[in-house]
Image 1 (tube, helix red, strand yellow):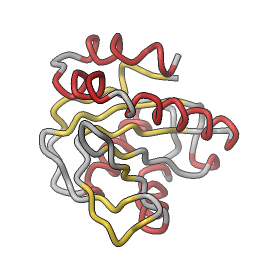
Image 2 (tube, helix red, strand yellow; image 1 turned 60 degrees about the horizontal axis):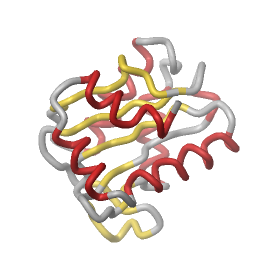
Image 3 (cartoon, helix red, strand yellow; image 1 turned 135 degrees about the vertical axis):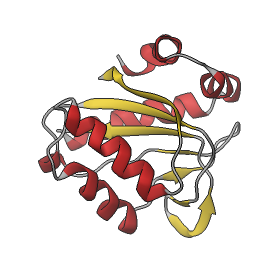
Image 4 (spheres, helix red, strand yellow; image 1 turned 60 degrees about the vertical axis):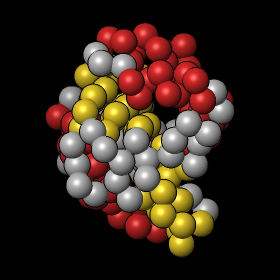
Length: 149
């Protein structure tokens, strides 16, 4: 599920919406998602935020409904700087994610399993901190491929 062509390092965005639109368009560009995917991410995030606090730093796990997806995939964005993002389950709390794990899911049951894998990953603060500091797509891929593939 993890794809090298959907790993972005130093993504420089000013807002959550810009991250969603930029990464969402990357999913469209490689054929993983439909043209409706980027806006569907933004719309879903407005109602069901996806930022989570982690021991190392905040992360987010944006995703949307299967009708906007062609094939399952996971992408990772390591942001140039944190952006404001609402916390999952507590939208009144603003977090500042530095790493985004974006999901394209065709089977809702698969989504739960993928989110569990991400939860295991974020419970390892040393590994998460290492991921944030990696400099190449290959390094990021190698650091997390065991989690997603």
